[in-house]
Image (cartoon, rainbow, N blue to C red):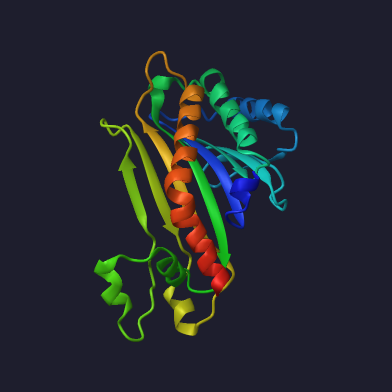
Amino acid sequence: MAHYASLSDDFFVNINLNTEMQLPSARETVLEFFGRVQKSYPTMRNFYTRETGDSVLEEDKDQSAYRWMCLEQRRICSGAVNPQSVDLAVEQHALALQLAPYMLSVSPLDCEALDFLFGFDFMYRGNHDEIVAEALGTGSAFEGLLAIPGSKPLNYEPSITLALESDCRRQCRLMVETRTNAYQVRRNEFPGESITVYFTVRQYGSLPHDGSFEATLHELRADCERLLEECIIEQVLRPISQAIARR
């Protein structure tokens, strides 16, 4: 944890299993699934349903670190905020994927996409788009726009998706999300909100007949951590952190 925790104010490790068919929504099925999850993680005791019908089980969110899991109509989500280690987060995610075939009737054939995601939050009271443009640059094509006298960035959220294999079934995506609006820039009043960097590795489509969700999870994790080390930490995360520290 120490390595990732030092890169931002908060970080999280999530998975999303998107299914082609709708997940079971019967009361007994949902409660049995979350009851089995709670057996492994007794501190996940806050259960509720949203207006959309999504069901959520989570730990107390007023802690600095907490787990959560959610069943949507066509998606199983599992997340860990500031986990003690990535291994512990992956154990939680693997449990959800182990239970899905037996308790929710989700087969590898039913997989639309499986995501493994790292997220990093940077708290900043100021113009998020301006600080991201300063940290990451905009490229020579946009330098002239930023040089316009009196101009201020209002929306700068770099995003790129890359195919990692020739068939495009495995992809990675980097996305920066800012939370500054024109009203805040106009008044020069900014709440303390987070800039979030998301880095996701996704496997599209049904898995092979002899494949498994858990094995694919470990493959995606390995790709995600390797690419973070090679392409994201020094090139994206540290520059944002350093730009904020200079203000």
